Image 1 (cartoon, rainbow, N blue to C red):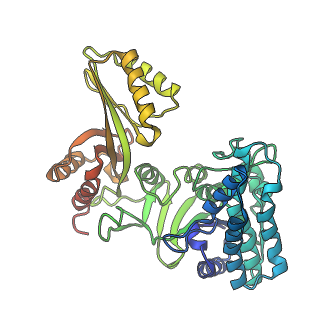
Image 2: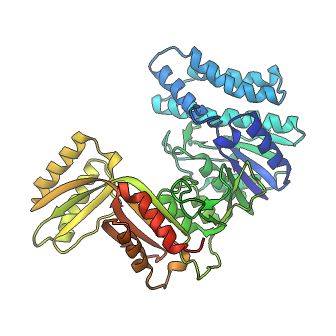
Image 3: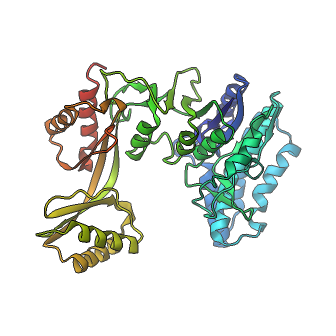
Amino acid sequence: MKVVKFGGSSLANATQVRKVVEIVKADDQRRFVVVSAPGKRWPDDIKVTDLFIDYANRVIAAKPIADITDAIISRYQDIATAFHISTDQFAPIKQAILSLPDQTYQDNDYLMATFKAHGERLNALLFAQILAQEGVKAKYLDPHDAGILVTDHPNDAEIIPDSYAQIGEWTDSDIVRVIPGFFGYNLQGQICTFSRGGSDITGAIMARGVSADRYENFTDVNAIYAANPSVVTNPIAIHHMTFREMRELSYAGFSVFHDEALIPAIEGNIEVVVKNTNHPGERGTSITAAKRINPAYPVSGIASSPNFCGIYIRKYMLDKTAFSQKILHILSEYGLTYEHMPSGIDDLTVIMRQDQLTDDLEDRLIRELVIALKPDEIHITHDYALLMVVGEGMRNRTGLMSKATDALARQNVKLVMVNQGASEISMMFGIQQDKANAAIQALYETFFPEL
């Protein structure tokens, strides 16, 4: 039995929805279908989720809403009309859109969560109708009825582990259940959404809950590639990778999966397969707990993530323990997180995501660090990128770090940080952001020389 999830690009218009219908019909093991809200139909289009966010903000600000509700209704109506969904069948979807401002919300955070969730909720209702119209025995399954209970964080919820037992009661369903992604219900029965991209999380939660044999995640790429195709021309497809490899690469910028989406599948040891809605016959990428390693290619993938900064601190006779404790305390007071803290004899660097900092906050942070640490030198450098080389075959292999640094040196890429993880399946480099693409290209040519 399979759980299958379709992203927004797969459901953006009637043409794409037709492809999804045929994919579901092609395999009677696809019993649970998790859907996102309709995505962009063309590059400058607006996702339905973003329309709902605009709708919510207008309601909060008491601004006119007629044009935004018309736009949202039109997106669903266009798809419904193409599949001959009657006016009476479509009426509840239209009414749900129009009645959202009339509901009672605990505060604006819960209002926003409910509005956002309706992108997925109404698309699931519509898609269940379409499947039934196409002769598939299918019904909508609301996350509340499915048992998806989440923590009480309206726009950043997490699954409550006890939910899996209730979700498991649906395991033997003999019809197709269509479930909206992105949200669940707290213990008080209020809608709370996962973080953005959370439909992937719902798919993995359902897969674990019903003990699926496979979780298929359909998107708009044929597979996960060893490097970004916009940087490297025709990179090889990774047809099999491990959960650990995917997690490492996701951290460094692979955007196929939401960062948290694999966790339920990992916990349930469920195979995840990434496939293309537009080319469903392609092999795709299988992600499992273990894989057979090709010794000729110890590296599986290379990725880069931009927009980091580094706070460099130097003090003679540095007491690292006391220094680190003071730094972490100050970061905590400002609600800031750090990614890495490499250190030397008399210095250390705090590497963090720079989008956490405004100019004012940055000035205040540096002043407080100066007062608390009394450093001999302190300064901040912006526009770092973190570059990750990942592969299960890297374990117990010598010379890989040398090959990587030699390749980067040939491209005049200055290293501001080097870190080899304890797992031995990754190497991380901090570099200047404007050198990231050249670095990826150089590393790809080094580790995939004949491809």
